Image (cartoon, rainbow, N blue to C red; front, side, top):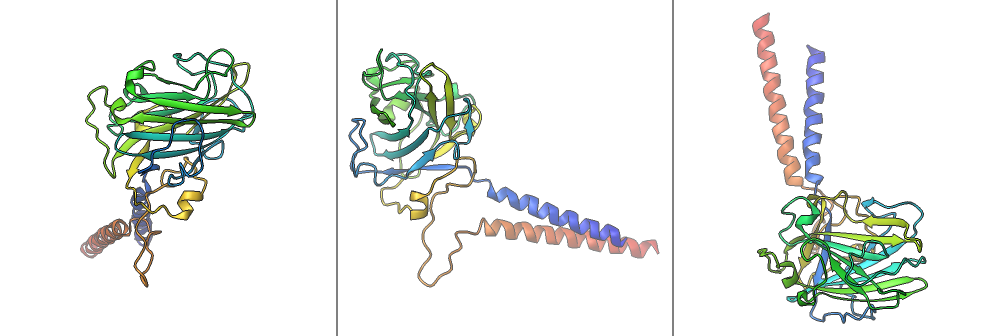
Length: 310
């Protein structure tokens, strides 16, 4: 009987920790800070334009998934801002291999560039074809010396000027930059019930494509695993006065960890205790109490059974 009680104790505590672990399942969040000074979409990340944005790194060390081949050392820094008119995207890509040229108006899947999936109803649906999926390349046309181009793959299946989407880019020997603007109206084209407010959450997914000059795909680094909307990251439209802690603003953030990027909490009052590192203490306490009561109930029942069986 003692062995039985010891085993029961172990089962209860294993169950306790297993259930408590569910509290750690917060998904990756990408913070987008509201701006009163919209960046100029000219392909140049000018000084001061993106200072308020969080800097995110997407490369082989931070990506949630790579669906291309090995051998790429491409690295993308990207920045996001928003206002009442739309979403602003800035990207600086380190890439010393120049990909094949592409024609503006094509699907832009066989060259260097960035892709952004947006699900304005925050992950309603399943397949990525249920969302908007934009590609942006820094240059187009036959010699890679034409203007930047964009393409939306599932809702528009093209790049209509009427959408209001803008793209600009610059390329040099070290890589390229892309700046883009997506009006909120461009992701309401199918009658989605979406309006941008402080705290609004949007399903979002970033990909950086790297191709060699012979059209061999070297990498496709992604912030999201799989090919389902349900695996998208969560983009949070943050208020303009959001104070981004230095450790979030300057750190390299891996997208492989579900809880790695969380919206910062308010700082504790002077003289108080900082409990921000504690993960859902109320939930853990409730689970512990439940497990303790359950164990006590079982123990009493076992004792009564022993007394009646003597």
